[in-house]
Length: 234
Length: 219
Ligand code: B1M
Image 1 (cartoon, rainbow over the protein chains, first blue to last red):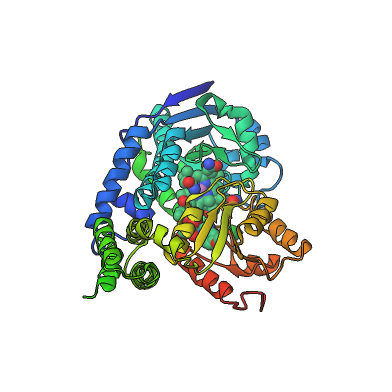
Image 2 (image 1 turned 90 degrees about the vertical axis):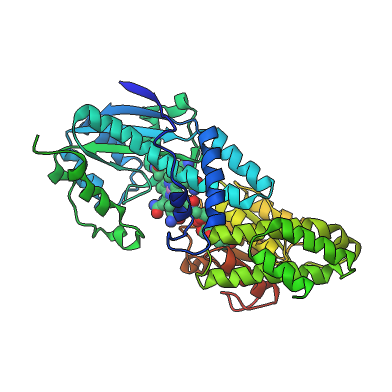
């Protein structure tokens, strides 16, 4: 079943400090007040123009194994490649903040309001990720199981994997289009697969060949948070 | 504090309204527009750029300063044209074909303008021919290319090959940047320079415009 979801802006909106963090400003930086003021404007603008939509389709392990292979560009060893065959449930998803936010960012640049343009851009980047989290939270609540999501373009999954994902999701229904270079239009969008299963399938060491180039090793936090999100004893 | 120093100081603090007011005062006091530009506006951007390099301020601070610079610049632009003041250099800038990412490229453009360059921003999804044609038509000597995807990075090589084919190497120099781009990649494809961010793009382009060797050891 293919589900189309309207994503509410509440709970998606990033905080002013998160918007600054996304722009590389540490919370300990001095003279933050003018920056926080701009972030506040960016946040308000985000709230006014966010048109969050998502699309979600459950697929079987067999079906996903074809989709995952995509056009063959994946690294030979990847965490997702090793995890999904053991999954209990797999959901393809795509989410977008909508076109209006992107248009708005460009308008601020055209008006030479660079600080506001950058604040809104940062807010929209965070919101796109948060929208993906919202979809994941929704499925987690329905399944009473915690998951981890993976996206083409990350962790050895080649970005061309977008093609197979889009063929199944048909996210044109939420105004999302894939370009020849596998970019999604509108820009502030995220796609991927949410993998569900017992906690042990999700655990891996981030020592794959591509991990050396990764700046944040976000996977560690995601794996660590699995247990806190779902009470596995029940 | 002298008027131009005040402009630089207020600009560094991101005070757009005050910069506009002080620039108006400087114009009334008949300070030549070129001096207001170099001693006030660009000097202020250099101050904030220096602090950014030392991690004393961050990107949004630099953008507030750039907005203030723009407020002053609007006032002196007609005077610069009247006086026939030449800008430090002219660069064409764009995100390569197939790529829609533009924030990084925009930030580089803002920094270049802040450093006194004239920037011809071609936008996103720019074909190799357009980079070269626009540079030739606009009299630019530098082509700046941005790419945020591994799938679009190869277009940078196409632009450089086109420059070579048309025997424009040396006349058109290239700078590349964007998340997946590295200095090694720049060497590999024969770009003149690689820049990590907007502030370093200004440094690299200043070098190239001054006839510096770049990665290739010469224009
Ligand atoms: C001319 O000379 C020069 C000189 C310097 C130059 C220059 C030119 N051009 C740029 N610079 C430099 O100066 C600028 C100012 O400092 C800088 O410009 P930037 O544009 O880099 O910097 C901006 C000001 C801030 N930076 C950014 O906005 C990008 C940051 C990273 C983390 C990023 C973000 C935030 C996002 N993303 Co995504 N994203 C990544 C990025 C990884 C990274 N560390 O950079 C990248 C670009 N993304 C990637 C991917 C895969 C994706 N993203 C996606 C989504 C997103 C978000 C929506 C969550 C968000 C916003 C996207 C956007 N750009 O608007 C998806 C695609 C979105 C789409 N529309 O298709 C998706 C495909 C994931 C998915 N399947 O959903 C990767 C691309 C990998 C590849 N193979 O090419 C990626 C490199 C991350 C990674 N894997 O490490 C410098 O690069």
